[in-house]
Length: 229
Image 1 (cartoon, rainbow, N blue to C red):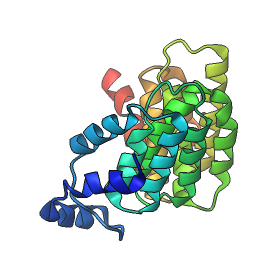
Image 2: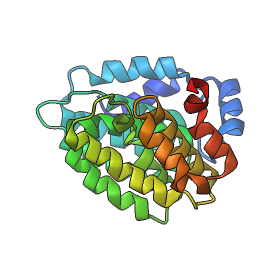
Image 3: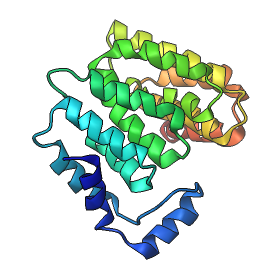
């Protein structure tokens, strides 16, 4: 399977009316084809079968370089898998290489979901993610929180998992004064998800650095805490 053939598969499902709606919604200038997510899921599933990790990474990057909205979403979906054997470095390197090109939440989130699997498979990669928190590129800074969301979900984290959780909370604390809506939302998202599994740390964050969040982000971060009170 080549990127050209995969892109032809996507284009065959194009819906011009839906494409126009998507362009208005996402507000980022690029080609939109109007292909629905379930259709992209089905295509990505067929591409994953029978390809090596290296070939899948090459296919995904070829789709990404087209800069077509659905192609970038499909590229991420083609690498979204818990286990990639025997070696997942090609997939991680491709995903990490995309981060500086993020420019909209839908594409960024699709790529980060793929990246989450690779971080969980090799948590040492969090050291690479740490560099994103200092980037001038807002979407890279946001990605550092979105891609580490799996560390909000353990009810009884092991020491190494807790260390990563606390490390990311430190990143979030450094973001609270950032005025960008997407950064504020990302912090709120991380704390909101954390509050379902580690209420004390979520409450401590909101009582400390979280006081500098914008009001909408404070409300979002505390949503489950308020319900449980």
